Length: 293
Image 1 (cartoon, rainbow, N blue to C red):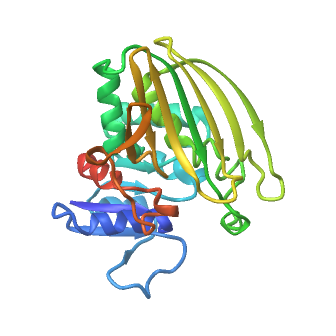
Image 2 (image 1 turned 30 degrees about the horizontal axis):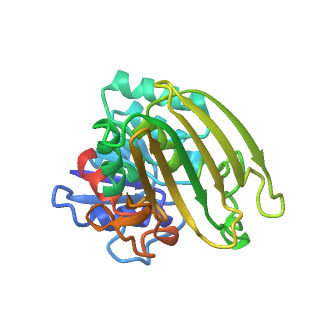
């Protein structure tokens, strides 16, 4: 099996390290506009579809700036190559529908990397909700309080609507996905957005209230304006109890015992700082990649 990584920034390098360990893969090819020839064991190629097909590449990983996800995914899917896109999927709803349509017509996979679904804590929470261990859920309070400074946004494509999006499409997208994954599709929502134009063009603070199709109410508060990275969390209330998921990437599960919040070690994980921004990438990518391949 031969695979292609399109874009070799933070996420692309992370994919590369995981893919190197996979015994199913014969060759890993890299497309990156910058010259990587000085790096060892890097097969850098041009993005030429004839060459890609000649090299018998069957699976591709898109880890470019967000605004380029659609461009490269569309070309690869139209040529019957399976595609895994780093979040966010795309920045335009019509582009999302188009890629889904192509993937169905070509009968290939078009996946998005929402790795937090694989966290032990999220899997535990989903199990508790499905089995109604805390009764019928009526309220979910979720929050993401992170810091992204001027240096982070100094990279030309970050923080702009046409190339990156804001806190909702970039950082809080995992929290939104977790809300839908665990509590079901959304029927209606209302939102308030705020902007810090000294740092970025797009929103860096958002408050959203959701009504899920099953009647559950949830709220999301997200910002990258904090002075440090505090937490990402989902506090879940049922008519027979409470469950709490916390951690920088929704990676720790907590039980409520006699009015005390107790960490459930068995269903919690610790992520290292080497795993992307503040360790936020977590452990889930490897599980997604193995299933994708």
